[in-house]
Image (cartoon, rainbow, N blue to C red):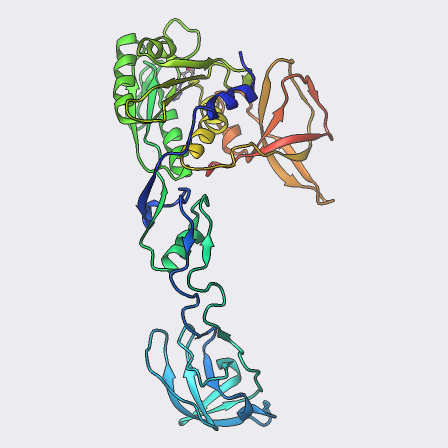
Length: 412
Ligand code: AMP
Ligand code: MG
């Protein structure tokens, strides 16, 4: 058995970012940009109004108040998107709507709430300073500025920024093609009747959701019965289609656990099998050289228990997928929280305890282990928002002590 750190190191040293590709905006979410984003033009692109109101000259409002409003003649209206040009002169005003281009003669925009319209005139009940409510051209970016550096993960505001500049697509690292292989004669698809001894396949659905949460949008699914032939067939299909293969079950020491044996017969290089981590002891990791490609195929044999498969996905597969997608910050980050209930175990394995974070009345972060910590009890993981790292050599984490906590982030 190897340690958690060693397993993670062995995985990450086999991974390099995939080549770049051009992706449409609707496929970019979750990707890492492979080039900086440059401002194609100034942003805002033109002076525009931050409010619905009236554009005017500040000198026309001197001494204006609710009791003694200034009366200005309306010479027109500028709506968002309207190209009309107007020139203000003393005693005149323009109706201007949010986002509309502000003509250069307008000194300030006064919010509608301080104005009243009357038969071609507007009564303004306050004074204004030059620039009020005007968003200036180039206030955020000048043309040619770097908007975002390469390597940024695409989140919703990044998509918005790209669209702001008129990009309909952008370059990012290719997302890995992934295949999921479920194993087990007992598995039935949800929606069908269960016979005695059968259970529903939950892992393939949970793993698909885990991939989708990372921004991966394409995967293949195969099922292997508990025979060598079926296992080989499923992995053969998976290897043809995918860069990363994730299997569930069949990787322990049972009589019908064919994953490791089959992969080795197919030429997969075993990098490790079995780790000192709970849940997740039987995790397997192997690599396969690919003709004409630098990046080897990565094969993860995850355990079958529903909690183990997701926890080990989170700890070992997610960092690999993220690095393939271009993530350069692959060191796990832990925060510290006060444990609300003592935990005990035997020394020898890192225990990843499902927990819920909260803040106590002193504003300190506290962590409470969830009920249902056994590896077939998914509810404890479903309700958890963190994993307490109960380190290998320790046997006791006392109530009230500070413990290392990893935030469970299914998005990466
Ligand atoms: P195994 O490692 O194949 O012995 O599987 C360990 C446990 O996980 C067994 O109780 C299996 O029935 C269960 N299991 C395996 N694959 C799945 C799956 N796809 N969905 C739900 N449970 C599974
Ligand atoms: Mg099995």
